[in-house]
Image (cartoon, rainbow, N blue to C red; front, side, top):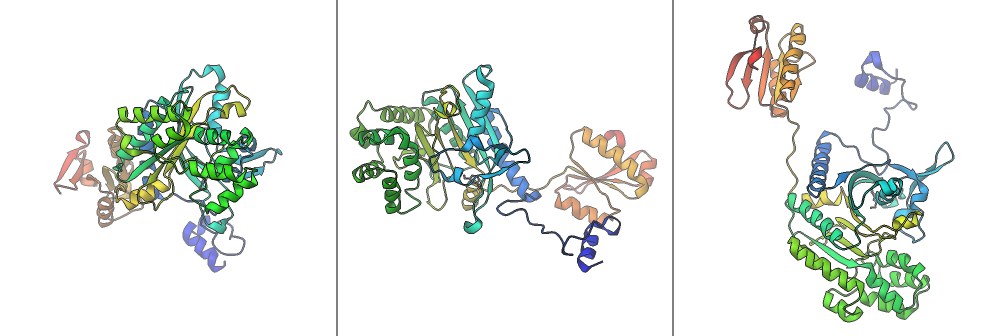
Length: 445
Ligand SMILES: OCc1cccc(Br)n1
């Protein structure tokens, strides 16, 4: 056997040694490029984060849904030049179908709403937590998967829906100890751009593509944005007007530019008034430069940012009233947000708000002799029936190991089975905080 096979044996033991790997070495134990494993310590943090996602969703009366990570490619074929649709993790399956790992959750949600049709009584308040994928040339070394929390409200045309979603986002941040001094939420409305484009007589068909390009305004040089806009066929003066409009940072200036009866002005004013009612207006700021990079947004758009400016957007969302009709359904008002699992963890690290999460059990059950293992099972079953988390020591360990193990797991008690005590129907229980030790009859455990 080659050395590596021995290595494998040392991992699997001689009796179960699998076939030596092809080149005689141990397999590559890293996960596929751009993906992550979640060993226990990382999985505890992820579970903690997702539990907070779920608790906030439940607090706001939302129902959880889920759908396959694999979807038909046609769900994401959009012509607006979005990065997300140009990096599909797509392939042809063995049945010749064009499929893809989903890059986002919203199209799946739209598909499910259409599938439910009239049986889904509106409004729907649905949330999902799902892994999303992109295939990006590793030249940029970025991840190819992340988990996203989405909350969506289907069937409400008014901005009260957006106000609820924003309130949920603020509730989530507050729950984790993040305040409006740490994070702000930029708000705008794509109807600002629609109005400005309308005045420059830009065809409606270019609207989504203009939004996708303008969304890059803070990521690529302005000249590049101008170049891409003119390449779309926009006259130079229209490009100037658009970019000037995007510098607006006050609703009064917006009202002066568009007039008080402009839909964007009306909707934004309503939203800020609701925000005052909810008490989170100090998190919000109007910022006309926010358009978000997804083609299907039609109204309100928003994104949460860290006020130090060191991180990428923490979450983002908006209104997408026409997505269902692009799938052949009846137009249904909808809005929602996506909240990724990566930037929020970076923010919590920076703010020293990461929770201390340890693997914990209540009782360690320790048979002093292998012959007492069946009895240890009886004790463990009894304790678990009471809802106590029990770790049964296996592998013929000594007491010294068991006490170190108990300390690592911050166990409350060590329950020791010895033949003498068992003969009297008792077990020895050591309280690991008071160090008190006593024999307890099994029925008093
Ligand atoms: O938000 C863009 C995106 C989509 C899928 C996977 C990853 Br990582 N990032």
